[in-house]
Amino acid sequence: MEKINSREPQLGERIGRRIIFFPLPLQGHINPMLQLANILHSIGFSITIIHTKLNSPNPTNYPHFTFHQILSEFDEYSDILSLLTMLNEKCVEPFKQALSELLGDKSGDPIGCLISDAILYFTSDVAKSFNLPRIVLRTGGVASFLTFAAFPVLLQKGYLPIQDSRLEEPIIELPPLRVKDLPVIKTSQPEKLYSLLHNMIQETKSSSGLIWNTFEELEQPSLTKLRQDFPIPIFPIGPFHKHIASSSSSLIPEDQSSISWLDKQANSSVVYVSFGSIASIEEKDFLEIAQGLESSKHPFLWVVRPGLIRGADWLEPLPQDFLDLLNGRGHIVKWAPQVEVLVHRAVGAFWTHNGWNSTLESICEGVPMICMPCFTDQLVNARYVSDVWGVGLQLENGNLERGEIEKAIQKVMVEKEGEEIRERVLCLKEKASICLRPGGSSYESLKSLKNYISLF
Ligand code: UDP
Image 1 (cartoon, rainbow, N blue to C red):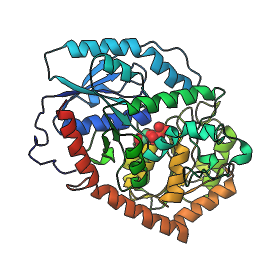
Image 2 (image 1 turned 120 degrees about the horizontal axis):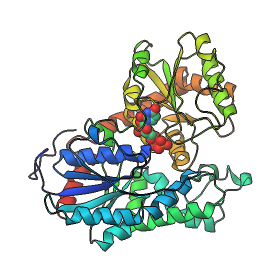
Image 3 (image 1 turned 30 degrees about the vertical axis):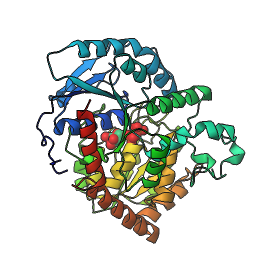
């Protein structure tokens, strides 16, 4: 990204304001929050990152930031929903104490504002108690956020809770979504999910502003609706990771053999497969995926994170000679340097769970997607990828069968449909690049954000 060079301070020139960041301690939230911190540091702000011991970022990768760990004790948690609820309960006091210490320290730049993850809604009341402006970072897409905001209506109209008999029914209020695309998660306590989302939406509405890792040209209609429904300053300044190079914030070591293996493959020949940092699958689905990849005859790079297969530590369910029989056509790693992988000339398609970061990273590199969403916003993202932007196709629910997998891979990699998808995603890639240049939508939005924060 080029310099923001109006009459304001130049890139790197210090503004004399510190911003406090508080990321949700999950990989898909830490990455964009630290990228945003890097962007704001590069335009002159000082940065302090408050973090939990759980999934703590590595401070040595960010010598230009100050880190402040809060002392929070967490109980065991059985699922992601319990973790999110617990974070909002158990972090209140330690976060208050951290803010009190940081605001009381008069030795550095004065603190201008807090930027916290939308899901950490408890930070709203704490920030208010210190009269500290709070800006929200929503790390997902706008379309899924609007769907979350519509939950009360969806409940009232009977779309929620989801009934199996209505899965194909279109949601007239939220085209092109169908009931099966609603961003829910399997839970025995749906009330807990509704309450979490309600709090997230309310405390976002009452914030001083809302930052997005998206761009105007990608989500224009959704952003227009958002501006009507959320009358606070809105800053779509994505794609974050394309502004400036920043260090990795991976919680798991990145296996660089991913790149050396890709180096040996032909251009656009490889299917990259990854389902992100949280999703898990049944063993039978895992084996079906393995067989589908095997019979597709395309080379594949597959991220099998420890914990991906329910009930297994890592690759035990895979027949021992699976990779040997492929003669180097398949490579499996525990964690990949994903952005580097997507940039690589050898990658021809991304079989993804459609977490927002993965979706955006794929778009930015012009890589067509095979979508296999697992829960929450991934379901909405996947529908937009396949039906709105036309940059991927969906492995529809229940189709996780080797023959269907093989067909989907063939379609994207060699058939006419795949060619058209590739053209569309390259067009979006170009838009993602243009929006970061002077005069581009995200560039201008970042300028407004800088001016806005400088006033606090
Ligand atoms: N990622 C990575 N290596 C991997 C898999 C994922 O670096 O092997 C990164 C990926 O680039 C993305 C993040 O982890 O930035 C995952 O975020 P996403 O929103 O896609 O999914 P989540 O993990 O939150 O479900």
